[in-house]
Length: 142
Image 1 (cartoon, rainbow, N blue to C red):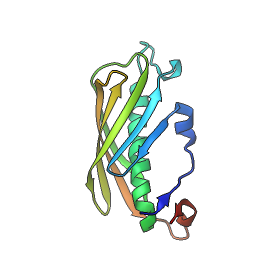
Image 2 (cartoon, one colour; image 1 turned 90 degrees about the horizontal axis):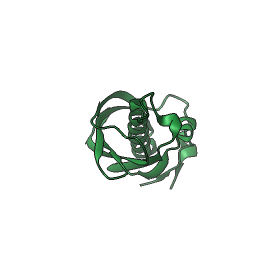
Image 3 (tube, one colour; image 1 turned 135 degrees about the vertical axis):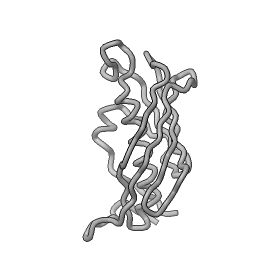
Image 4 (cartoon, rainbow, N blue to C red; image 1 turned 30 degrees about the horizontal axis):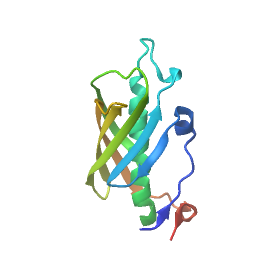
């Protein structure tokens, strides 16, 4: 499989996302919770958890489909928040459960630093042909 190198995401840099794996079977990101990740009740904002899920699924899908001249974009996300996170590290582990020609579906777990599942999510990625004239070769090395 060719190596894919995507540019850094300004949003993920803002969040402080640490990329562990962009593997298209099981992708993983981590985050160390900061005060600006909190909602008013001092726990992690659910939108931060959802953003981590979207980022890891998008990046891993893109790594797999770019060499085929296709691009990936979020289509839908559902996140169930199960327990609050108040401090420490957070890890998202996403597993591809369907790799179709036009859609990929991921299941993800958001875990706290003690390994407890704090949220579960399902993410659907749309996969489409790259727009005409798009030069994807800049992201791919063999």
